Length: 195
Image (cartoon, rainbow, N blue to C red; front, top):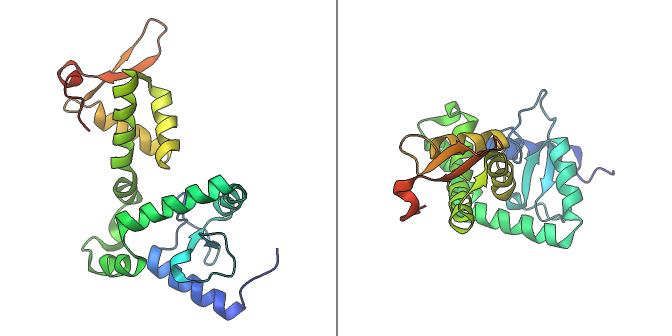
């Protein structure tokens, strides 16, 4: 693949993105092993659109996967709507930089806390809506389907389910006769079924 960046331009763009978003993959939130190991991705798929709002850092595997998905018009439109939603919920990148500088937690906040801010509400809405319509779900379907629906990892989805099925949560885990783990509303929440 030909290099679209001049050496100096890429270095400045990379440094800006690393400062703005952190030097981690913006899709899987994985770290890197050496400086400069992340790819600069164009969110809208247009390689000549170097507007900073259109750029993000991705690891090689996520960048290739996103490129494959972007070949489909439907997937490209979906990715753009996800980015618009992220812009709506997180604000403009310039605002996020100021928020990170002012934020008392700084870089000390763990990745899981950052993931919670991005995915937990959407996961809860998805799972509770599904249960309202279907009354039960297999735990593995809730983990994998929810992770796919909102974009979080299955491990993160398991944590959300653990919270929802805790003593104060609205959901219950139990086994059916085939030893499958099912998730349902607790009796006291069956009438309310609130998000």
